[in-house]
Length: 185
Image: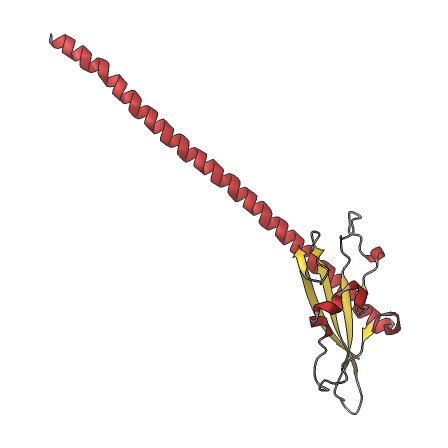
């Protein structure tokens, strides 16, 4: 009789262990699945971040290209460029501020210079969806050593490949980058 009890005890023990093993396997499976999902989300997030950085760098490069285009035009032949005169009602030492008004950047406003398509192709032969633009504003400079100096405030603006603009000039999607320089001679 003792043996029958032992075999019954020995016979029921594997069933109890099998339930625990199944539970442990399910827990490990859930933990591994969660880790895999987290890794996939992290990879996707990293890809989005790198894409945003690439777009931002592209917009910055295009803004610098526009700035260089207007700087060259202002130095070599300002008559071939759109140059805004300083406001007549402002203080003589005030910096121009036409660049800060979004309406001045509208295509129909006639206050900006657009970089020509021939200067926009990258190494792959691609051109941006929206060409970079720049604005040249003439400045009143204080006389130095009895000489009147001429100066310009130049603002360049570049756009990301997914840039979309509303009819009022506000950004609907994408982003833009702005750069400025002061030139005096």
